[in-house]
Image (cartoon, rainbow, N blue to C red; front, side, top):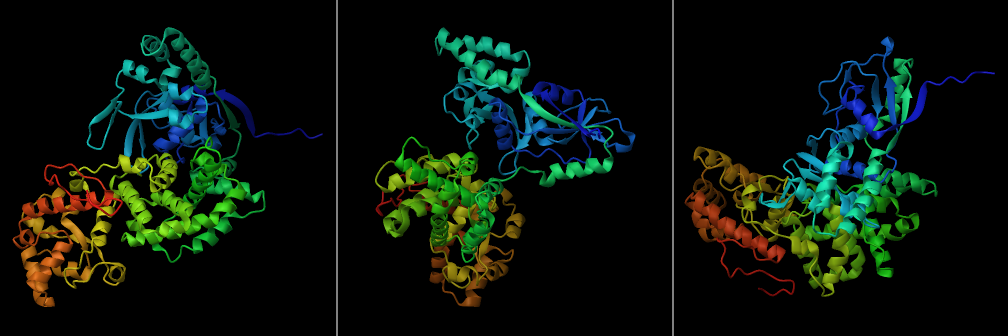
Length: 601
């Protein structure tokens, strides 16, 4: 009889014990591990799972002490002043353990990044009132707050202040590190002094907080597999490669592909088949398979909601994973046609390339809306509604984050709006600040791309050819957005870079026209263009007006007056697109804009 030989041990460890070992350096990383990369949303999702005592996978560790299997160790990010020699190294679970350590034990703001890869510092809380609700979505209860614990709008104005324990308790926000230190008792005492609910309700609420949140964190157990120190280096590397391939979690597309495979359906091949239909629609060039699944899920849940209004409309990750094969097959073709109709709509709004689409994600509700409407979407009045909703999303810059929640509102609300009911949330939320024009400088901004397309939609003409910039000229003339007052001229005349690089000083022009403009003063390049192309004075004025440029200010090289007048004109253009007045002391109080019925207000 042969004795079984095992190279590993399998057990469970408490979350707090694991994090303490990380803090004192007993558990570290091998130096070949890549850096910690998780963003704010992934951290919140992880914390939500732990708060529900859901499994989040096992941890793979390696015992140290074998001289032939030595790796240079380094502490988990956020840990300082630790012994140089750890007892264990993390082979798999770095992202999860680092996220949990920084958000639960370090008590320092977590340096992470948002969906746009911008670095942010965050503290993590749980909204206990939301968490203990029946049928609540725990992910919505995990809150991340800036370093100073104050929320601000795009103007920098404070909209919510949670900077004191009293304010946190009043809002029901429990700082997660308190769960593992004495701060939890101070939080409880402060919470019990709040006068918003009765004493009996406080004790009942605290009991639920303790059993449904605190104890789940404190008693959370991790499955831990530990490779023995006798394991050879070659075997350790092989195991590491097996468990860390790609270094990222499976996407919903990959998970759903595996699910459908059990029913003898190849999702990947079907996606490639659908994608081929998009080949002649450049606006869809960046569309991802997860976007496609999200749109199908959105439409599927909407149709289910119409049959049973107790069912919600949603396309979150969990909803996509619940998408049945039968519903996928039922709605896939409709959504494919919806995306194609969406691309034609974007073409009509003068978006010609995928890189110029303000929000790729806004294609998801747009395709679902067109799919639900079918042939009705061809009606002019309906297209006006969709256009206003779309431009409110773009120019209000509303699709930067938390998109799934907005999508779930967009589809039913836009369809109801078309039937004569209330405006969609996206239209109501849209707000464009006049000063935002000053800060739109690159294609990184959705509104920057939006203004670029609006100018073409308005019928702007090339300075040199006089041709209206549209589909027929966009590719042939290599149209792009260029400076009106050239960079060299602005630098030579000490015009602020923040002004001359803003969208106010830019417009769509052909490559050849921009070459002729060069670094000359406007008065010089306009004279050169008129002479070389025999454009009359009146015709040139008409061309300039098509770009919302006051000819006199450009010909006199008066940047300040040009800037002020064009800003007013661009704000009027934006106001027309979103169907809303833009409050600005520079704008006439009787500003006219087109409404959904084709009239004016």
